[in-house]
Image (tube, rainbow, N blue to C red; front, side, top):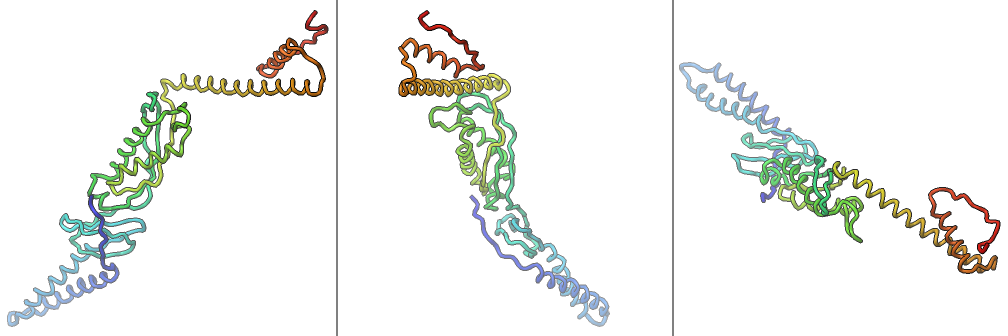
Length: 295
């Protein structure tokens, strides 16, 4: 991997003064030498060989100026050789023959497209994520990969597919991490995998979060009915558990306070009636028995 180097450049304002002196001084000296040329003196002609290079040097030096905004960097190359990176903001001057490649160090968002993949159990799902990243090593970003923005995009989708294949969408075993119920764990797993993939491009992944997660349309209806059935079963279990507790409490209270002495048959009838009232979906309609259980 290419190692990033920090290079020093000259202050642009100071060199601007030098460039102005070279250009205007060279123009004035050239005009003066041209005006003093005569067939009897060769001194003025010899002076042109000095003033014209000074003027050319001033013009060429104009190509060495560049500016940098905060959180931007500039990699300098001389005839294809990497000489270093400038990361300070301001107005600078460097060798005019240097190639200046500017790169942003600011935090960026990369949102993936909605991908259709299979989860750990083989169920087709749709998934998408947003990746927050920034360039840390400018040399690696520019020289170790072809186009680092495209590299981040492709690797983000590849890592998201691999992560979706590693977890079940939902209904995992006891303590199993799933895509829907373990958002923080899944996001950290995705961020760590992306960091491992993008490290060679000099990129740091700050955060990775899922933005879309759903079953694929062809099984969405069946899975919705399954979720509804499981919700109904879970609700029924709570209702029955509560009803049994209330019946037990009623029998214990009647026995403790000696309100009535019930035999097993009457207890069974009372338990049956209370469970019907407590577990029924509709309000119970009481029927008053004028006789007894034995007539």
